[in-house]
Length: 101
Image (cartoon, rainbow, N blue to C red):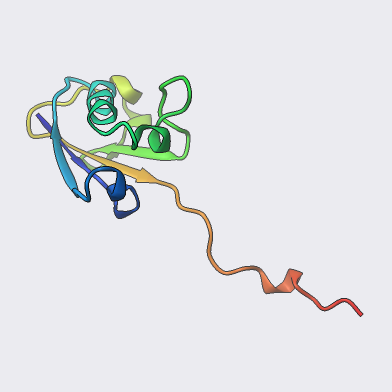
């Protein structure tokens, strides 16, 4: 089993669990196990084709799977997979909020 670390922004969809142990021999299989176990999470990490959304970064250990074999990256018992969705937002750009006279 691999351990998947769930970021706080996605924990409402995993019963507030920060780590999950899931079966799979590749990142794709583990993600499939994750989305099957927590179907409400799936739309936040997978697109309509079942592929990882482009803004979701996935690491095995400290290495981004994009520099490995993508979702075909093998995982082994004891592997740690970390999901890191990009988060946008912040303070508005006040320069663009000039008063119109």
